[in-house]
Image 1 (cartoon, rainbow, N blue to C red):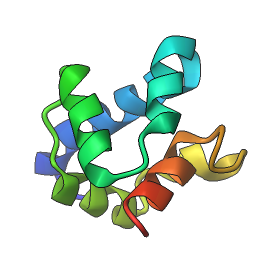
Image 2 (cartoon, rainbow, N blue to C red):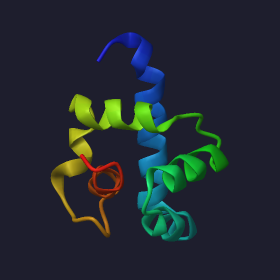
Image 3 (cartoon, rainbow, N blue to C red):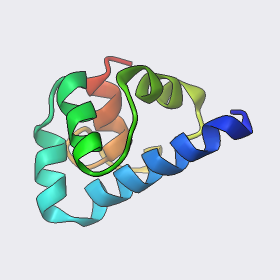
Image 4 (cartoon, one colour):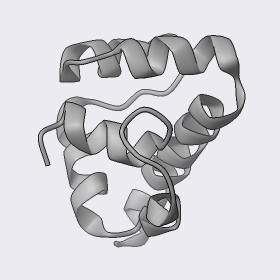
Length: 86
């Protein structure tokens, strides 16, 4: 991943950290089932990212530290992969 992508990777990490640590945010995060809903949730959280950015980051392999545990209902990256059909 190039250095221009680092801010997006940091934003994705922050987004996942919110989903992992804030019960109210997690409820909305895990309720999102479409790319549009997930992008809207990110934008509402102040993270300007679009569906293509999500897909590129999720395909990059740079999110692997999030994949060490859990399933769709309790791991943010696994849930994002399902939502974005990766």
